[in-house]
Length: 450
Image (tube, rainbow, N blue to C red; front, side, top):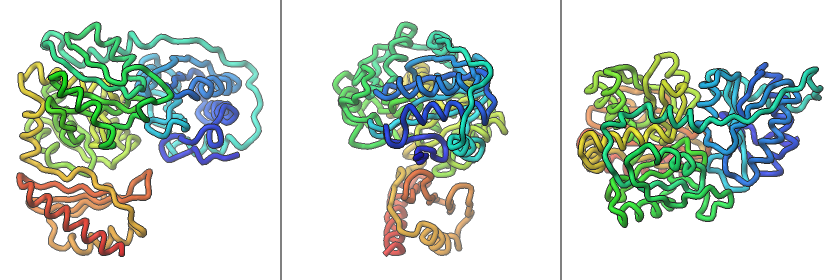
């Protein structure tokens, strides 16, 4: 049996050769045997293969003795929410996020929506799939569970409805599932939504939604300009990531959104800890300190960030890759809470999104993440450290290589998911220095890779 769909954090593979109903049923059985779960949330995304895979998964869960609570078509964060909110033993979301449309997968959590990854159960589930199974003495029960209303109530709890004013907002669901939630939230908010690629459609008539790719941004940017909107928001298919465009249609780097959300959240809580990743840090550190919070660095990746948030009881965590985590959301990531907080900030401050962001770009210009395919990444990273580490103020290995000088810093790391190295460079108030150092590092990487 091909088990290549099991990855470090989740399952993803092509349907039907790498993931299919037969395998999904066995995964359900193995999940129960490894975790001991008795009550499990199951949800699925808009992909055409998702209902069938979810049904087979549910059959396996019930055959192994677990009760299934089917929340139907939803986003990944609704599985996180339902698992935690209804105090279930676990949850499984059938989704392949932004993978090609002939792919599917699963994201798994345990009690309190704690992630199940390769180092805490996912590999055990993979290995158990290969062994024979026997039905449980008592079959599990199946019932549907309506979670949208409780979930929407929870989302609205993050903002002060009284401070909101009419805004025009472009929302691009990319034919994923986010439009279903926007339609529910719309009834409670004074915003006018301009809806782009709004209908959930697993055929992906406008391409698989992944706004991190520059070629996928124009539909949102153009709609912002045409409608004179205050901001634009776009999501990936299972909407656990959201991406922002200012009133000029400019795409905002996720790094600056982390700082904005940290500031907004700390204003509400009057302090607390904020988790951030090591790729770009200075803007976040500055804003968190100014707002009376404490910034804590964590290795990149949702499993690491979520665990560190629990350890530190952090109020918010953010990654520049557009994942945003919230303590009151079971320390999980949400693609809906961030834009609500940003819209609230625009209403409260009376400022435009561009003016809020421009001040931060000016203070801490950054390169954005640059990917390069390198034949021997460890050798290249070691050589870069040997050259740049000598005169550095600080060198860190929390995640890849971080090297810091008085007026600029960089992070160079291998991807967890792709055969590339990722470079991020930032400076203090000097865009020319940032650009020069970025070019210098890329040239050195190319020389070392020759």
